[in-house]
Length: 401
Image 1: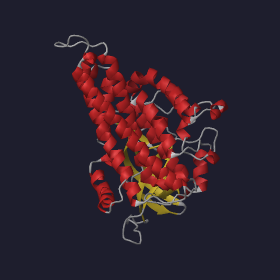
Image 2: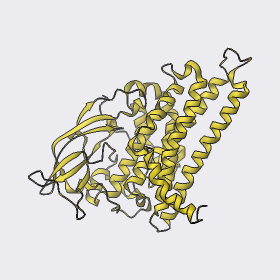
Image 3: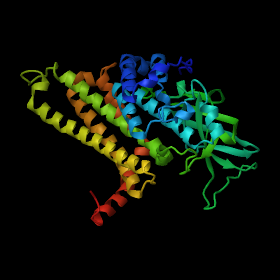
Image 4: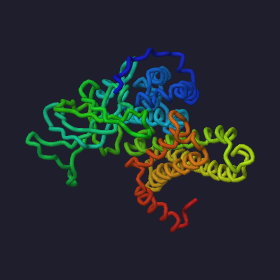
């Protein structure tokens, strides 16, 4: 496993550049580093330094805490561009930047300043779901737990740890409605024991390592309610909530990977011959028909993802809370786009011939990344089932647009 990288120097002149221009500048470096990222199973030092120099790790962190203060839709555009350059990089960056934004939005002010009130602010990674156990003590918790899937952890300075709160005898505390009291916390990197165990065939470069904590003291100000719907800060973006922000970022990753697959298959098809085809496969009507359909599907999914997120963001910015239908359509779009990305990359894989399975190959990597992305628990098909009810009700009442 790659050790945490050195802190980069900062660059004030990046402040005048817009978020997408910054993302495109980093994407050029990502594309050049993509093979090494997969070989090392984590973002490489040049990519890390470029992301930090452009301040993109902190794009959703308020300016008051040394961030860029972007909205969610603007952040999606950054994630999508980096994912187009390399799916693993986009995924790891998504995990870092969104986790970091949650720390900024939901930690108490002192805790947030402990993480971010530095020339190079903190970067977070790790599992925030409550799989550990935290004994409540004076001033905080003593936490022990085993965690997986710490995407982007090789270059993170703070590591997430979700836990169920217990009393000093180890009995779980309960909420007024009888559920467990669960907390999400962030600990300095050196307090976590990293165990590697990231040997996979897709999204290889995400560095999604296993790790653990053994009786680590976590002060109260470095923790917040795992299922909170009330952010500490007033910035409108945090009204999307823990799930809205944490889950939403999977959509632009899928879009970026699908776009990469389309880019690559066009390059391959314009030079690749095949038995039974008079010229290159890109000239065949069969290829063109399939390409036109898959490209339309990709563009439709992209338009829908951004439509529902922009609508929700405008609603929030006007001072409102998200409705049940907003949340349903957000979940619908996020899960559906995973299926679209898998279908689009599957098309590219079938036409790519040996370019689909050779290593290293960008097309093969995009195909594998898209398939792994569909397996995340937060985009399980059941989320579509849950979303269907409020959307069906709109149709039943004649309110669907």
